[in-house]
Image (cartoon, rainbow over all chains, first blue to last red; front, top):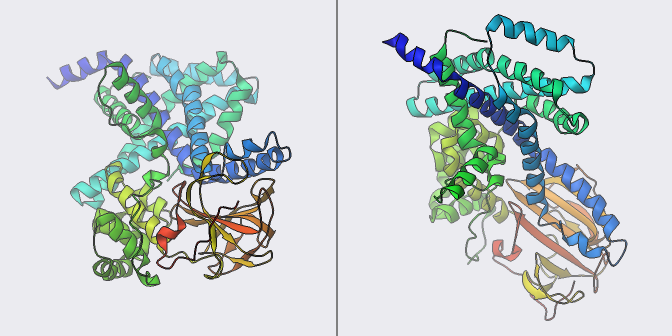
Length: 211
Length: 297
């Protein structure tokens, strides 16, 4: 009976695995964007100060100073972080929906071949981002599991065990698949320079969010 | 990568989907689109509320103060404004919790989310700052975190000093007014304090200089970030005495008043923002400087 359940679940893996991979990357991208939110605010403040000095030099552009004024800057900074996160989702998470599972040995072999055929560092940006962001997602989900269990059951050892098990399972089962699919996608993906501009800071932010 | 663990894979995928669906802006976007498509109501929060662990929620503003706030009770006043309680009763509770948990922010979390949650956050967080403590808590704590953050924000606002001597008159109050230079009705997001050029401007609380710059509208402008979502702004200065990123203490002289930028005369534009929303600085003071007739900018 147990085998039958597993067999039935196995038949719909083509639906849940791509969705799970996409969600894992989206959680990671959010964790990364959130952890640098304050730095984004500082960055927006600097850019805003620069533009304010520029716009206020001429009377006809002076009203632009109030367009992103002192009051809107926090909203604007968070909107920048949100746009960055959604762009990262579009570049890393959405392509993971195209994951087409193969035999394990064949997938590893293909992955190694794809890695060998990479000609420029720009091609490596998406897979690297997929790896680090998926790991950030794994850390984030593992923390959620630990916190939820700890506050519901008040059993610290069980919560910590569940966190470690979730992290290891996600890192072993889903993260390699995300990287493989990203390697596959990176071969044909276009807009490599704009993608690198969005994703390289995200690599750093993703690592900062690991804990 | 076909393995023999379909149940584990299903469980892990479901876990990722749950986290992505309920706790990311992308998930909120999909849920909102779905609700719009099927004409149902969505439970998704506004997209920007998913940042800062839910701590940047503008507070419901309390009524104007009847009497002065003792500095040691500022946080209790903030908590009381959210809980509709009594500051005198809450102050000793906050003090006790703060002693047990090691910080005021953790004490506030204990007050709103329970001591277990606060203790867990203290153990797991990177620092004792409220947003780090909030990030350590699981997503189901978000509603109480929002209330904690509001209390902390109001408490911080109640503890603020005043940038100029109390004798300096307000020449233009907070609120919608007819702009003295540009015309038309606009929100005046702070108060204007009319004073001669060169009067020392003091930091109303400890914090970090987030902006020290100059432009033709705001003049020489200083923005201080005091933490807990409280930011103060000082415009039209003659000279700025601190630089970007510098830490300042409460009462430190940070600028000298002036007439720089788009003004009708020398004054200081002083503004308080709570979670990015401008609020009337007089709301947090029992004693108001006198208000002069006529508007300036």
